[in-house]
View 1 (spheres, rainbow, N blue to C red):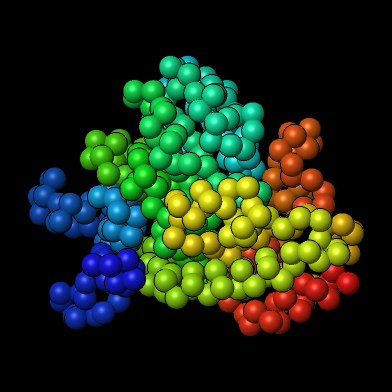
View 2: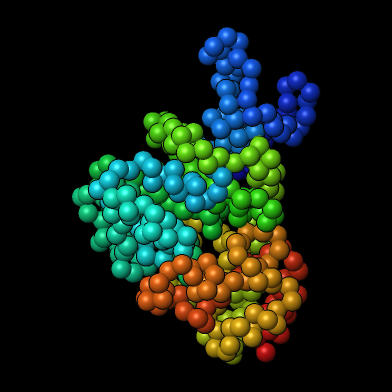
Length: 375
C-alpha cells in the first residue's frame, strides 16, 4: 500500500467479531488466563500489552517503513526507553540544538547515572561527524531541528558512524509524511506523537520505530519494566489523528510556504527560517532528503517580540506544535527555557526568535494576522 492508504488501513482492520471499522478501545487492565501462563493472544496485563496499543504500534511501524514500533506515554518517555539501552560510561553524541526537554533529560537526569553526552559544536552534518568517537554508542539528531529548522544529512551520518553505534533520528517535525529516516540508514526513529501524528492538541504520546527485531525486543523490555505506556484511549486518539495525516500535512505545508514567502523581506522581520525557501542554507539538502515541509516557520524579529505576541489574534501563544490550530512560542523562555542562558546564546536561540506552528486556517487570514502584529 502507498503511504496515504497505509495511514488509514495499516494495523486498523475492521473488528473480526463486530465488523467495527474503527479499532475498539480496549479498556481492560488485565486479561483472563486459560491456566497459569495461558495467555490469550499474548495478553496478560495492560502495561505489558494491550489490543489498542498493539494496533497503534502496527500503524506506526507501517507508516515509518519499519517492522516494529513501541508506543510510550510521551515523547520524553520514548527517549527514556532509548537511553535505557545504554549503560554507565556509554557515550551519546547529539546535535547541539536538540529540544530543551531532551537537553534537560541528558544533562540533569541520565548524566548522573554515568552516561556521557557530547554535543556537537555547530548545527551541521560535519559538526556531528567531527564529534563522533570510537566510543560513541548512540548518535542522536533532530532534523529539522527545534527551533532553528536546521537540516542534517541522515544518510551521511549513517555512513560515517562507527561500528556498533546506533543512529537515532527525531522525526517529529517532518512527520512520516515528509521523511522516513529508516530508509536513509537510521536505526531508530523517534516521535512525539503529541504533535503531527495526533494532530489535534488533545493527546500526549511518544513512539520509537525500528527494523531490527532484537533492538525492538530490548526496547519492549524497558517499555514494560518502566511502565511509561499510553492509555488505550490515548492510543485511539493518536491512531485517529494518523488517519488524516496526509491531508493535514498538505495543508500545513501550503500555509507554511504562504507565511514564509509572505514575510520574507518584511521590514519587521530580520530573518525567516524555513527550509523550503531557496535562501535557506540547507534548502538543497531538504529537497533531496524530504518530500516536503511541515508547518514550522521561525522568525527573528526586529521589533519587540512581546508586543508582537500580544497583538496576534489567530496564532495562540502556547507550547507544542502540529495541531490544526496555529500556535506561536518564544523558544528562549518556553521550549528551551531549561537551557542555561549561555547555551541558548551559543545556539542562536535568542530573545528575538519566535517559532510559528502554522495551522490549517485560511492562509490569507493567517498572513494578515502576522502582518498586523508586526505593524
